[in-house]
Length: 439
Ligand SMILES: Cc1ncc(COP(=O)(O)O)c(C=O)c1O
Image (tube, rainbow, N blue to C red):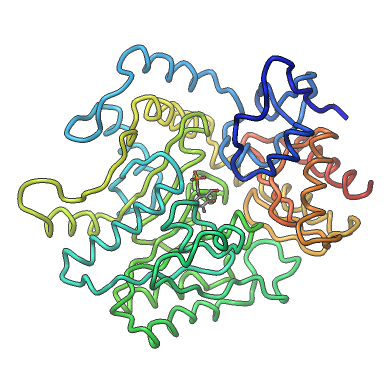
């Protein structure tokens, strides 16, 4: 029903699709050919509401003219310059604008091209920081079960989702995983659960077992997003912060999903009142329109690397050809204007109560076994039918067919609409999910 027909002239075979069942998709493709505001459009011009902001990227709604024009102008003015030994003004300007949104003291911005690159960059920064301070024995990392930290080898080693790890060997040595916080007491909780802060003590156990002085950094998503929205138990992040401080470990928040307004503040760090040492971001920094990510460091981390490295020459041997690409910076600057002028973060906070009421009202829909939520994000988990994840996969296809796009992980549907959503969009999302669950 309503599938894009493969076009006769274009074979679907050469394109190897990422994170997709290629054979199934190519037999029954579900495509989009354009988008505007809250909606995608299929080849047969059906509107499909975007309930996952593309992939948590499109905070300001699709096809923003301001961003498109800024990129167009930039590509006609300065299309590329090497980011090593050369630079362009917009890179500095964007770093300044980004640091106006990050928590106080987090003000040194390293640009990359994706969330995965941001994670691996943050791992290297942590190693470098300890090395220049004479602590190069700190080589271990701690992360968490059910975490997603992208797909580069560092991020895969940190990851806590089995399918993203199992085919790729043993990962890095010295990466240890805390338990996740999806304990039974936290089912059907709206916002931060009361239970589970003590799970942060897993980090303390690792300090006691391996020596806290050997651990470089602890990585967590403030809300585990890709797994299906696991908000942090009350007090959990504070406890991680304290254990890190007591043991000289850097705390890294992976804010690739939680950043840029998703939780009602600019970053999860502000929503949850805990400031990390490094934070990663990507996705909504350009509204998803250009590939871009960043790592933001607390100034002392940057200063240590600047002052502790060689007196002359390169302080940090790391960077990408497309770091701070002019077109991405132009898109980012246009997006910063939209955040400011349209008060997107305040809009997200204002819509949150209605969004949460509407999502949690689906608790009685057929098959729903859990709803977890925080800010403008909810994970709606349904009981498995057949193999784990099979039902979630069928649901996302059915939802496309009835006019709703979202990301599922296993049997959890992840709802995270653009921050420009109105109440009627939230209603439309809930109605369509209920229809799909009832069918
Ligand atoms: C928390 C987190 N980290 C890293 C990534 C990887 O980002 P990318 O797909 O841009 O490499 C994601 C992607 O969803 C993410 O959610």
